[in-house]
Image 1 (cartoon, rainbow, N blue to C red):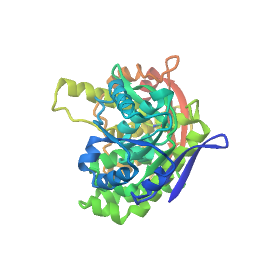
Image 2: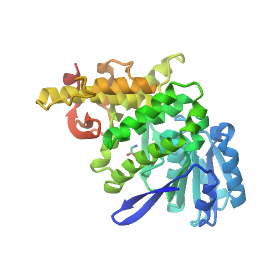
Image 3: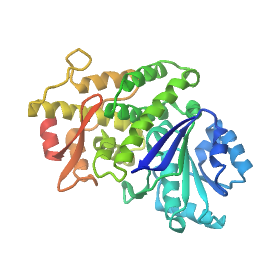
Image 4: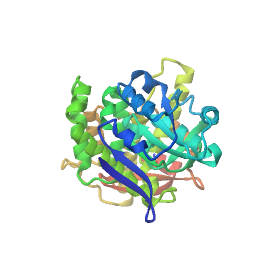
Length: 380
Ligand code: GLY
């Protein structure tokens, strides 16, 4: 079993454990007297590993609650339902609340555990790639509020996050690739050769119809990729838990992605036929746009453009080619002027400027503060 620690100074504040045996959960729960499980109802219904997880929870005598994990249900109401259930169950300050599901389930459960009786312990078993490499690591919890994503929440660390890559076998390829975008993001931030390895793995995944078999046959390399992506994030969070500086790098592509998701949601409200866009798809498009902005910024400021792939391409073209070969979409369906209108309202904007994370090369991202007008000028 691989263990990655998150630190505050010298203290370990959270542990990430990676192992391909679901049964390992039993030993991780051993030290906890009373466990309360909150599981995504879709995981309970569709994930083959849910039966094994349920057996572990039964042997621990852990009561369980199902939640619907959708952006629409990611609200204070659901958090209060979890709190009410914990009260009904008589959960005391000694409780460990275990979330099993994707990022919506872990975000809501972590938040509920953080306010229940002024905070009880919690842990995660993420069942999507997106949650394994991003949402369930680093302690961000929260819910949507007033049409803003993750507007209410707190940064508080889980006791542990148990990552079992083999449970991803039953994930739809679209959901899997959504998480892959966040994994690639980690390797664009810190490379060490892992970006290329991830692209190779994902090329194989997207070019086969037997995705479950491919995943099982290549689960060791996948585990290594997930472990390294988690190590990148754990290092950043250990240095800047509360996002005063370096942690902002993890928002690479996200300012554009949030605008894309907001506009896609508006379109769906106008017409049910409008295509939905997953978070990872929006992040992939957002990273390509961030690379376009970065190429333009460096051209304008006289910074040399790194010759990517030996073809004299800028980074934008390299990311486009790589993401396409991995099966990720790259073409943003919205005009820059529309995106700009949404980005002007970005909740992370400070004094009219947004902290843009610009990829200068794979493995080299930098933060540049810009107004949206400056971004539009550079990208027009
Ligand atoms: N998902 C970005 C972060 O945890 O900071």
